[in-house]
Image (cartoon, rainbow, N blue to C red):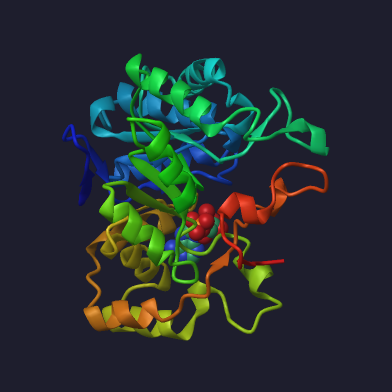
Length: 323
Ligand code: A2P
């Protein structure tokens, strides 16, 4: 398995197991299945609500010698209700307790959005604007966490180029990773070039186009990625599956990728995508499919009277969202 190699020589395997929407009761087996198959990268987040069960699976895997802690890369994410500087370390400690770990390999600011502790905003005044808790303050908390060795690397998720540039201006510690939605319908070439230029790694989430794709694409003229004729055609040439093509396309672009599955066959199939080698011609075919279409479009942060809009979230004027 290829790795992305950090400045201190730490290695993040390019292919990891995603756990967003992996339900309690399913994720324990999924993580063990993945580790047994050879996955060495698990992507988690506090808000997924399944970290305790993942922690049980990790504990079992370490106990039984399936894998050593030092050989598996574990990422988690700071939730939006803990953006104040002094709230970051307690939130990370809570995640570590749930995962039954002493440290994370990577901790990310999940969204550039803040809200009150103990809430999931349902009314506008539960949001907190970035003027009140600036991202620079949250980032100071992340730097504190790294200095205390609670995590080896820090980064962000769902950040725009503008927000990355601002971070690089306000802090000497730059984010090492930006985890964003990336797939052939949302290729974000400008972001890829920017991150390559500044040595920031990108991790592709929802590389298969999310579990909601069927519903979301129902009112569009295009089909879902997994059913796209070009993807199916490329897959047939390598005797592999459309999902494997999508995963390998992400790896070939130099990003890491975290397809979610709780199904043993698909967990295996996705892992074996690392073995597919797409030709330049096939990469070019897939590169033509960009629609600048976000499935995880952030509309859940947008509320009349609240400080967040799609424009100030993504820092783009023209955004094709799915609704
Ligand atoms: P399941 O967990 O039942 O396998 P994404 O990572 O892009 O958000 O996609 C996740 C969705 O894709 C989940 O619904 C997952 O379901 C499904 N999925 C994962 N791997 C594959 C695969 N190899 N082929 C088809 N669907 C897949």
